Amino acid sequence: MRIERVVAHRCALPLVRPFRTSFGREYARDVVLLEVTTADGVTGWGECVASTQPLYSHEFNDAALLVLERFLVPRLLGRDLQIEEVPGLLAPVRGHPMARGALELGVLDAGLRAEGRSLASYLGGVRDEVDCGVSVGIPDDDSLATLLDEVSGYVEAGYRRVKLKIQPGWDVEPTRAVRERWPDVPLQVDANQAYTRADIEHLAALDEFDLLLVEQPIHEDDLLGHRLLAERMATPVCLDESVLSAESAESAIDYGACEIVNIKAGRVGGYLEARRVHDVARGRGVPVWCGGMVETGVGRAANLALASLPSFTLPGDTSGSDRFYARDVTEPFVLRDGRIDVPTGPGLGVTPIPEVLAELTVARHELT
Ligand code: SMG
Ligand code: MG
Picture 1 (cartoon, rainbow, N blue to C red):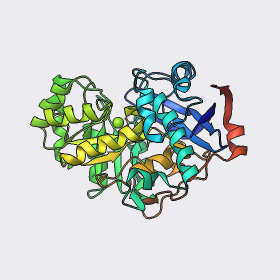
Picture 2 (picture 1 turned 135 degrees about the horizontal axis):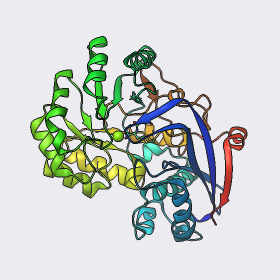
Picture 3 (picture 1 turned 45 degrees about the horizontal axis):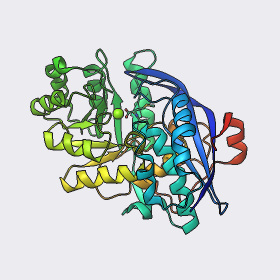
Picture 4 (picture 1 turned 30 degrees about the vertical axis):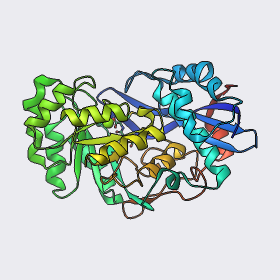
């Protein structure tokens, strides 16, 4: 296939409620969608999962657009390529995995659409529906009542697992409150690096709540800290931000810093690298699950395809579109009995609805 044109649509999507984590609070999602067109006139879509500000990681959308336009898109433009060549062609550009992942996804979608093949089938999916979890932010008013009210809505909606965002001052108490109210709900917590090695004893207090895992409690560079925590805690330690490639997943697992892996394609540079992370974990008997970055239907479709691979044995942050959006850019993904169907159509199986995309778009950038 030959890539002829790449257009970035920068969209603003209001969230149904603010999403607050240990690193910030979002009221709306700033999303870059890439429209990739081939010389044969086939169009594919990719989503960049960075945000306006570099708070989850170093990436942010202004920088992603710049690196795409100046360094990434030119590496693919006008040449005959196979999907499998894309990571290698983009690899010389260091860092910026979310920008690389967005472009790779657009090319993947276009290539698979041309072949009439679904992303799940291409990646090696083995499930036609996936178990879904939901990520619950820190309430705006810091109140347990607000938290319980929100969780109650998700439990009633049928989610198969609940993840609570935690930070110092918002950890043991909210986890206890949720566990007491729902003794059987599969539960886990995510700190987004908010703790240090000095907090290991404090974090070990979470053991009493029978959690599936504790996600990225300590700084992403501190593998020793995570290993010490894993040795101290009965609850499995899961890494998110620390895992940037299949190689880093392998190091973290073999070092003893990571007993479960959260896989996000954007964090590792795309869905092909995400599959490599899955394969490394699988080879070591380490369970994985699909993380989320508050994606629109474009990225959500791809995550569902990824989550259909065999070692995704834990429910992912693959919630229904209505968890975040009253109106998504694609047809919404809807939870049914706590699960969502893996798209079966060619490529992503969904596309942005032109009128909705036009309404949500705040800027359009020709990247070619
Ligand atoms: O998409 O459901 C979702 C969000 C899941 O909690 C979630 N993601 O660290 O895992 C994580 C956070 C990062 C969100 S940054 C926008
Ligand atoms: Mg996380």
